[in-house]
Length: 358
Image (cartoon, rainbow, N blue to C red; front, side):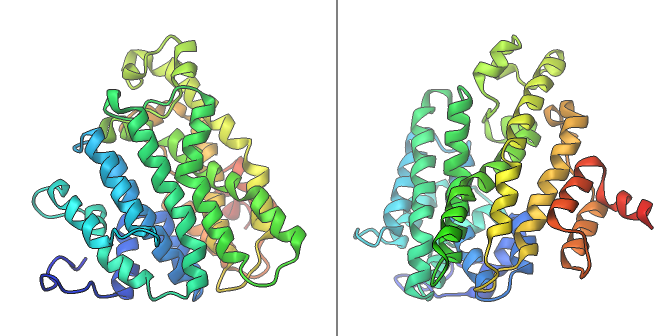
Protein backbone atom coordinates (compact mmCIF):
# COMPACT_ATOMS: atom_id res chain seq x y z
CA UNK A 1 0.00 0.00 0.00
CA UNK A 2 1.38 3.41 -0.92
CA UNK A 3 2.22 5.92 1.77
CA UNK A 4 0.62 9.36 2.02
CA UNK A 5 2.88 10.85 4.66
CA UNK A 6 5.27 12.35 2.11
CA UNK A 7 3.23 15.29 0.78
CA UNK A 8 4.99 18.69 1.04
CA UNK A 9 4.84 20.31 4.49
CA UNK A 10 1.81 22.57 4.64
CA UNK A 11 0.52 21.24 1.33
CA UNK A 12 -3.13 20.26 1.11
CA UNK A 13 -3.98 16.57 1.18
CA UNK A 14 -4.65 15.15 -2.27
CA UNK A 15 -7.65 12.95 -3.05
CA UNK A 16 -6.75 9.45 -4.17
CA UNK A 17 -9.73 7.21 -4.82
CA UNK A 18 -7.65 4.34 -6.21
CA UNK A 19 -5.60 4.22 -3.02
CA UNK A 20 -8.77 4.21 -0.91
CA UNK A 21 -10.15 1.20 -2.75
CA UNK A 22 -6.78 -0.54 -2.40
CA UNK A 23 -6.68 0.26 1.32
CA UNK A 24 -9.95 -1.54 2.02
CA UNK A 25 -8.50 -4.72 0.53
CA UNK A 26 -5.78 -4.65 3.19
CA UNK A 27 -7.90 -4.01 6.27
CA UNK A 28 -11.15 -5.96 5.86
CA UNK A 29 -11.75 -9.15 3.94
CA UNK A 30 -15.51 -8.84 4.53
CA UNK A 31 -15.92 -5.24 3.41
CA UNK A 32 -13.56 -5.79 0.49
CA UNK A 33 -15.91 -8.54 -0.72
CA UNK A 34 -18.86 -6.18 -0.30
CA UNK A 35 -17.29 -3.24 -2.10
CA UNK A 36 -16.06 -5.45 -4.95
CA UNK A 37 -19.61 -6.53 -5.80
CA UNK A 38 -21.24 -3.12 -5.47
CA UNK A 39 -21.62 -1.03 -8.59
CA UNK A 40 -20.74 2.62 -8.81
CA UNK A 41 -21.40 5.02 -7.21
CA UNK A 42 -22.32 2.89 -4.18
CA UNK A 43 -18.98 1.07 -4.26
CA UNK A 44 -17.07 4.32 -3.73
CA UNK A 45 -19.57 5.68 -1.19
CA UNK A 46 -19.31 2.56 0.99
CA UNK A 47 -15.53 2.38 0.52
CA UNK A 48 -15.01 5.90 1.84
CA UNK A 49 -17.62 5.60 4.58
CA UNK A 50 -15.99 2.39 5.75
CA UNK A 51 -12.49 3.91 5.80
CA UNK A 52 -13.72 6.86 7.88
CA UNK A 53 -15.08 4.33 10.39
CA UNK A 54 -11.94 2.21 10.21
CA UNK A 55 -9.74 5.08 11.40
CA UNK A 56 -11.76 5.25 14.62
CA UNK A 57 -11.91 1.47 14.99
CA UNK A 58 -8.12 1.15 14.78
CA UNK A 59 -7.63 3.81 17.44
CA UNK A 60 -10.20 2.20 19.74
CA UNK A 61 -8.51 -1.20 19.38
CA UNK A 62 -5.00 0.16 20.04
CA UNK A 63 -3.94 -1.22 23.42
CA UNK A 64 -0.66 0.73 23.31
CA UNK A 65 -2.57 4.02 23.71
CA UNK A 66 -3.64 4.79 27.32
CA UNK A 67 -7.39 5.43 27.69
CA UNK A 68 -7.25 9.20 28.24
CA UNK A 69 -5.22 10.11 25.13
CA UNK A 70 -7.12 7.39 23.23
CA UNK A 71 -10.45 9.08 23.99
CA UNK A 72 -8.94 12.52 23.27
CA UNK A 73 -7.72 11.31 19.88
CA UNK A 74 -11.18 9.98 19.03
CA UNK A 75 -12.75 13.29 20.10
CA UNK A 76 -10.28 15.21 17.92
CA UNK A 77 -11.14 12.95 14.97
CA UNK A 78 -14.85 13.55 15.57
CA UNK A 79 -14.27 17.29 15.62
CA UNK A 80 -12.29 17.07 12.37
CA UNK A 81 -15.32 15.51 10.68
CA UNK A 82 -17.75 18.04 12.17
CA UNK A 83 -18.46 20.71 9.53
CA UNK A 84 -19.37 23.19 12.30
CA UNK A 85 -15.95 23.21 14.02
CA UNK A 86 -12.63 24.78 13.06
CA UNK A 87 -10.72 21.54 13.67
CA UNK A 88 -9.45 20.04 10.44
CA UNK A 89 -8.17 16.61 9.52
CA UNK A 90 -4.52 17.75 9.61
CA UNK A 91 -4.93 18.58 13.30
CA UNK A 92 -6.14 15.04 13.90
CA UNK A 93 -3.23 13.64 11.88
CA UNK A 94 -0.76 15.68 13.93
CA UNK A 95 -2.35 14.42 17.17
CA UNK A 96 -2.09 10.83 15.94
CA UNK A 97 1.58 11.10 14.95
CA UNK A 98 3.07 10.21 18.32
CA UNK A 99 0.84 7.13 18.60
CA UNK A 100 1.68 5.58 15.25
CA UNK A 101 3.54 2.29 15.87
CA UNK A 102 7.26 2.39 15.15
CA UNK A 103 8.65 0.78 12.02
CA UNK A 104 6.66 -0.18 8.98
CA UNK A 105 2.99 0.56 9.52
CA UNK A 106 0.39 -2.18 9.25
CA UNK A 107 -2.44 -1.71 6.77
CA UNK A 108 -4.72 -0.55 9.62
CA UNK A 109 -2.27 2.12 10.76
CA UNK A 110 -1.58 3.19 7.18
CA UNK A 111 -5.28 4.06 7.04
CA UNK A 112 -4.96 6.18 10.20
CA UNK A 113 -1.80 7.86 8.87
CA UNK A 114 -3.57 8.54 5.58
CA UNK A 115 -6.71 10.06 7.12
CA UNK A 116 -6.10 13.38 5.30
CA UNK A 117 -6.11 11.54 1.96
CA UNK A 118 -9.33 9.74 2.85
CA UNK A 119 -10.93 13.01 3.96
CA UNK A 120 -9.82 14.82 0.79
CA UNK A 121 -11.27 12.03 -1.35
CA UNK A 122 -14.49 12.07 0.67
CA UNK A 123 -14.81 15.84 0.20
CA UNK A 124 -15.19 15.28 -3.54
CA UNK A 125 -18.44 13.34 -3.06
CA UNK A 126 -21.80 15.06 -3.67
CA UNK A 127 -23.22 16.99 -0.72
CA UNK A 128 -26.19 14.64 -0.26
CA UNK A 129 -23.84 11.66 -0.03
CA UNK A 130 -21.63 13.40 2.54
CA UNK A 131 -24.74 14.30 4.55
CA UNK A 132 -25.81 10.64 4.51
CA UNK A 133 -22.43 9.37 5.74
CA UNK A 134 -21.09 11.87 8.27
CA UNK A 135 -23.78 11.68 11.02
CA UNK A 136 -23.58 7.89 11.56
CA UNK A 137 -19.76 7.97 11.32
CA UNK A 138 -19.63 10.66 13.99
CA UNK A 139 -22.09 8.72 16.15
CA UNK A 140 -19.82 5.67 15.86
CA UNK A 141 -16.77 7.73 16.88
CA UNK A 142 -18.62 9.31 19.81
CA UNK A 143 -19.76 5.90 21.03
CA UNK A 144 -16.24 4.49 20.85
CA UNK A 145 -14.84 7.43 22.82
CA UNK A 146 -17.59 7.01 25.41
CA UNK A 147 -16.78 3.31 25.87
CA UNK A 148 -13.04 3.99 26.17
CA UNK A 149 -13.75 6.57 28.89
CA UNK A 150 -16.26 4.31 30.65
CA UNK A 151 -13.77 1.43 30.91
CA UNK A 152 -10.61 3.49 31.38
CA UNK A 153 -9.71 1.88 34.70
CA UNK A 154 -9.60 -1.58 33.11
CA UNK A 155 -7.29 -0.50 30.30
CA UNK A 156 -9.62 -2.21 27.82
CA UNK A 157 -13.32 -2.77 27.31
CA UNK A 158 -15.11 -5.03 29.81
CA UNK A 159 -18.77 -5.36 28.87
CA UNK A 160 -20.97 -5.67 31.94
CA UNK A 161 -24.33 -7.07 30.87
CA UNK A 162 -26.58 -7.77 27.88
CA UNK A 163 -27.81 -4.17 27.71
CA UNK A 164 -24.28 -2.82 27.50
CA UNK A 165 -23.40 -5.46 24.92
CA UNK A 166 -26.21 -4.27 22.66
CA UNK A 167 -25.29 -0.64 23.31
CA UNK A 168 -21.71 -1.33 22.21
CA UNK A 169 -22.87 -3.26 19.14
CA UNK A 170 -25.13 -0.36 18.20
CA UNK A 171 -22.28 2.14 18.19
CA UNK A 172 -19.85 -0.24 16.47
CA UNK A 173 -22.18 -1.62 13.78
CA UNK A 174 -25.77 -0.41 14.13
CA UNK A 175 -24.53 3.02 13.09
CA UNK A 176 -23.08 1.43 9.93
CA UNK A 177 -26.51 -0.04 9.20
CA UNK A 178 -27.92 3.48 9.41
CA UNK A 179 -25.15 4.76 7.13
CA UNK A 180 -26.06 2.20 4.46
CA UNK A 181 -29.74 3.07 4.84
CA UNK A 182 -29.11 6.80 4.57
CA UNK A 183 -27.42 6.17 1.23
CA UNK A 184 -30.15 3.86 -0.04
CA UNK A 185 -33.06 6.10 0.89
CA UNK A 186 -31.86 9.21 -0.94
CA UNK A 187 -34.47 10.34 -3.43
CA UNK A 188 -37.99 9.05 -3.91
CA UNK A 189 -38.90 5.92 -1.97
CA UNK A 190 -42.26 4.74 -0.65
CA UNK A 191 -42.73 5.83 2.96
CA UNK A 192 -43.53 2.32 4.22
CA UNK A 193 -40.44 0.86 2.56
CA UNK A 194 -38.26 3.64 3.94
CA UNK A 195 -39.65 2.98 7.43
CA UNK A 196 -39.07 -0.76 7.13
CA UNK A 197 -35.44 -0.15 6.24
CA UNK A 198 -34.84 2.12 9.20
CA UNK A 199 -36.73 -0.26 11.50
CA UNK A 200 -34.36 -3.14 10.66
CA UNK A 201 -31.06 -1.45 9.70
CA UNK A 202 -29.68 -1.57 13.23
CA UNK A 203 -30.57 -5.25 13.59
CA UNK A 204 -28.56 -6.04 10.46
CA UNK A 205 -25.53 -4.34 12.01
CA UNK A 206 -26.08 -5.96 15.42
CA UNK A 207 -26.20 -9.43 13.87
CA UNK A 208 -22.84 -9.01 12.14
CA UNK A 209 -21.20 -7.48 15.20
CA UNK A 210 -22.45 -10.18 17.57
CA UNK A 211 -21.11 -12.84 15.21
CA UNK A 212 -17.70 -11.15 15.31
CA UNK A 213 -17.80 -10.92 19.11
CA UNK A 214 -18.76 -14.59 19.41
CA UNK A 215 -15.99 -15.89 17.16
CA UNK A 216 -13.16 -13.54 18.18
CA UNK A 217 -13.09 -13.94 21.98
CA UNK A 218 -9.46 -15.12 22.05
CA UNK A 219 -8.10 -12.49 19.67
CA UNK A 220 -10.08 -9.67 21.28
CA UNK A 221 -8.58 -10.48 24.68
CA UNK A 222 -5.00 -11.33 23.70
CA UNK A 223 -4.49 -8.68 21.01
CA UNK A 224 -6.70 -5.79 22.17
CA UNK A 225 -7.36 -6.44 25.89
CA UNK A 226 -11.12 -6.35 25.31
CA UNK A 227 -13.73 -8.76 26.70
CA UNK A 228 -17.12 -8.40 25.07
CA UNK A 229 -18.71 -11.49 26.64
CA UNK A 230 -20.78 -9.86 29.40
CA UNK A 231 -19.36 -10.09 32.93
CA UNK A 232 -22.86 -10.94 34.18
CA UNK A 233 -23.13 -13.99 31.90
CA UNK A 234 -19.59 -15.15 32.74
CA UNK A 235 -20.23 -14.73 36.48
CA UNK A 236 -23.25 -17.04 36.20
CA UNK A 237 -20.77 -19.69 35.03
CA UNK A 238 -18.31 -18.84 37.82
CA UNK A 239 -15.78 -17.12 35.54
CA UNK A 240 -14.04 -13.76 35.97
CA UNK A 241 -13.60 -11.79 32.74
CA UNK A 242 -9.82 -11.80 33.21
CA UNK A 243 -9.88 -15.61 33.09
CA UNK A 244 -12.15 -15.93 30.06
CA UNK A 245 -9.63 -17.87 27.94
CA UNK A 246 -8.06 -19.96 30.71
CA UNK A 247 -8.06 -23.65 29.70
CA UNK A 248 -9.62 -24.68 33.02
CA UNK A 249 -12.62 -22.46 32.24
CA UNK A 250 -13.07 -23.52 28.64
CA UNK A 251 -16.24 -25.59 29.01
CA UNK A 252 -18.04 -22.98 31.09
CA UNK A 253 -16.83 -20.07 28.95
CA UNK A 254 -17.98 -21.95 25.85
CA UNK A 255 -21.49 -21.91 27.34
CA UNK A 256 -21.32 -18.10 27.35
CA UNK A 257 -20.12 -18.10 23.73
CA UNK A 258 -23.15 -20.26 22.92
CA UNK A 259 -25.41 -17.83 24.75
CA UNK A 260 -23.98 -14.96 22.69
CA UNK A 261 -24.56 -17.00 19.54
CA UNK A 262 -28.20 -17.48 20.53
CA UNK A 263 -28.51 -13.75 21.08
CA UNK A 264 -27.07 -13.09 17.64
CA UNK A 265 -29.57 -15.49 16.08
CA UNK A 266 -32.43 -13.42 17.48
CA UNK A 267 -31.56 -10.74 14.91
CA UNK A 268 -31.52 -13.03 11.86
CA UNK A 269 -35.14 -12.50 10.81
CA UNK A 270 -34.97 -8.70 10.98
CA UNK A 271 -31.61 -8.71 9.20
CA UNK A 272 -33.05 -10.79 6.39
CA UNK A 273 -36.08 -8.49 6.25
CA UNK A 274 -33.72 -5.55 5.86
CA UNK A 275 -32.04 -7.16 2.87
CA UNK A 276 -35.37 -8.05 1.27
CA UNK A 277 -36.51 -4.42 1.59
CA UNK A 278 -33.31 -2.92 0.13
CA UNK A 279 -33.77 -0.96 -3.09
CA UNK A 280 -31.29 -2.00 -5.77
CA UNK A 281 -30.35 1.48 -6.92
CA UNK A 282 -27.47 3.96 -6.63
CA UNK A 283 -25.22 1.00 -7.51
CA UNK A 284 -26.52 -1.21 -4.71
CA UNK A 285 -26.62 -4.99 -5.25
CA UNK A 286 -28.16 -7.80 -3.23
CA UNK A 287 -24.92 -9.79 -3.39
CA UNK A 288 -23.01 -7.04 -1.55
CA UNK A 289 -25.02 -7.49 1.64
CA UNK A 290 -26.42 -10.98 1.09
CA UNK A 291 -22.94 -12.51 1.13
CA UNK A 292 -21.92 -11.17 4.59
CA UNK A 293 -25.38 -12.08 5.91
CA UNK A 294 -25.05 -15.68 4.68
CA UNK A 295 -21.45 -15.92 5.90
CA UNK A 296 -22.73 -14.83 9.32
CA UNK A 297 -25.30 -17.64 9.16
CA UNK A 298 -22.52 -20.10 8.37
CA UNK A 299 -20.31 -18.78 11.15
CA UNK A 300 -23.17 -19.13 13.65
CA UNK A 301 -23.54 -22.75 12.52
CA UNK A 302 -19.85 -23.41 13.17
CA UNK A 303 -19.92 -21.61 16.52
CA UNK A 304 -22.89 -23.69 17.64
CA UNK A 305 -20.92 -26.86 16.79
CA UNK A 306 -17.63 -25.84 18.44
CA UNK A 307 -17.99 -22.77 20.70
CA UNK A 308 -14.83 -23.70 22.62
CA UNK A 309 -12.71 -22.91 19.54
CA UNK A 310 -13.57 -19.21 19.91
CA UNK A 311 -11.57 -19.31 23.16
CA UNK A 312 -8.37 -20.57 21.52
CA UNK A 313 -5.90 -19.55 18.84
CA UNK A 314 -7.71 -21.95 16.50
CA UNK A 315 -10.68 -19.63 16.28
CA UNK A 316 -13.86 -20.19 14.28
CA UNK A 317 -13.99 -19.51 10.57
CA UNK A 318 -15.88 -20.91 7.64
CA UNK A 319 -13.84 -22.38 4.81
CA UNK A 320 -12.73 -20.58 1.67
CA UNK A 321 -14.64 -23.23 -0.29
CA UNK A 322 -17.87 -22.23 1.42
CA UNK A 323 -17.17 -18.52 0.92
CA UNK A 324 -16.63 -19.14 -2.79
CA UNK A 325 -19.79 -21.23 -3.09
CA UNK A 326 -21.88 -18.56 -1.33
CA UNK A 327 -20.52 -15.82 -3.59
CA UNK A 328 -21.21 -17.89 -6.69
CA UNK A 329 -24.77 -18.56 -5.55
CA UNK A 330 -25.45 -14.87 -4.87
CA UNK A 331 -24.23 -13.97 -8.35
CA UNK A 332 -25.76 -16.85 -10.29
CA UNK A 333 -29.07 -16.73 -12.11
CA UNK A 334 -31.58 -19.33 -11.03
CA UNK A 335 -30.00 -19.67 -7.58
CA UNK A 336 -32.16 -20.36 -4.51
CA UNK A 337 -33.77 -17.39 -2.77
CA UNK A 338 -32.05 -15.65 0.13
CA UNK A 339 -34.36 -17.43 2.58
CA UNK A 340 -33.63 -20.80 1.00
CA UNK A 341 -29.88 -20.14 1.06
CA UNK A 342 -30.10 -19.18 4.71
CA UNK A 343 -31.86 -22.45 5.56
CA UNK A 344 -29.35 -24.53 3.59
CA UNK A 345 -26.31 -22.82 5.13
CA UNK A 346 -27.71 -23.10 8.64
CA UNK A 347 -27.79 -26.89 8.21
CA UNK A 348 -24.40 -27.61 6.62
CA UNK A 349 -21.48 -25.95 4.79
CA UNK A 350 -22.94 -24.63 1.55
CA UNK A 351 -20.30 -26.09 -0.77
CA UNK A 352 -21.17 -29.53 0.59
CA UNK A 353 -24.88 -28.90 0.12
CA UNK A 354 -24.22 -27.95 -3.51
CA UNK A 355 -22.07 -31.06 -4.05
CA UNK A 356 -24.72 -33.29 -2.51
CA UNK A 357 -27.39 -31.74 -4.73
CA UNK A 358 -25.27 -32.48 -7.80
